[in-house]
Image (spheres, rainbow, N blue to C red):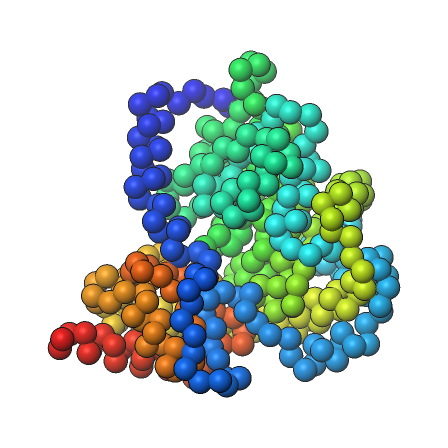
Length: 386
C-alpha cells in the first residue's frame, strides 16, 4: 500500500537519520586507511578489521593448483555454480568477482524500464557502499527505510513504504532488497516469510544481499534453502567469513541467471582462468561452513562479554561475528586502543572517534581474544591513573 508521508514527519525522519546514525556508520563499518600497523613483522597478526582479512591456507592453495584453468564456464567454475545453486535450492547460479557486482547485477536484472524504485534498509550495503550503483546502473529511486526496532525491517514497515500506486508522480517499487546478516544482526526467518508473501502479492521481486547468510545459517542452524526459497535472487559472498580469496555467487532461476550472465559481461565481469578461484570458493564452503563459523561466533560473544565487563559500551546486540563498540565510557579513543593493540599484533579499524567495528573470522584463535582483552584492560587501567 502506498502512503504519503507528511512533510513534518519526513523532516523529522531526515534529522533522526543525520543526527543519530551518520557518525556511527561513518566510523564503524569499513577499515580506515589510517590503520595502525603492528609493531613486529610476524605471521601471527590477528586482524579484526573485517572477515575479508582471511588468508588462503596451504590446503586451499593446493586445491587451486589442481583446478581447471579455462575461462568462466570451465569445469571448476561450473562445479561451484551448480553446488551453490543446489545448496540454496535455486535452479542456477553465476560466479562473479564481488558482492557489489552480484548485488548490482541482480537489481538490474529485475528491473526493466524506469521509473521504478528499490526499497531497502537505510543501513544496507547496496544503498551505502556500492558507489551509487542502483542509480547509475538501474536508474532507480532508492527508498531507504529505518527499522523502528533498530534491528531489522518488518513487513508492516515495508508495506507502508512501498509504492504501488499508478499515479505517474511516483516511481513504483519493483524490488525489495533485504540483507542477512546486516551489521552482524540476524533477520528472523518468520519476518522474511511475511515479507516474501507481501512481495508476491504486490508482484515485487525480492532480493537478498546474503553476503553473510552463511553466518545466519550457522548461528540459527537453519539450512540455506530455508532462507533462500523466499527470494527471487540471492547474492552469497565467498570472500568474507567463508574464507575464499575472492568472489561472490548469485543464484536464481535459469532465465534470471541467463540475464545476469549477460549483465556480468556488460559490467566487465567476464573471467579468465576463473576455475582456480571457483575451486578455492567451493573448498572454503566445504571447510568452514558451518562449524568454523559457529566457533567464530562463540569467540565474538566471549570478546563482547569481556569488553563489556571492562566498561566498554556494546552498541548493538552481538548475534554472529561483529561487535560495535564505544570506548567513550572508559575515556579512550579508538586510535589509542588501536595503538595499544598493535603492540600485540592485533589490528582494528582505527579512527579519531570512540566507535568502531570489530569483526571475527575463522582465523582468529582463542589466544587472540585473550591478548585483546589483556591489552584493552591495561590501557583502561593506565588511563584511570593519569
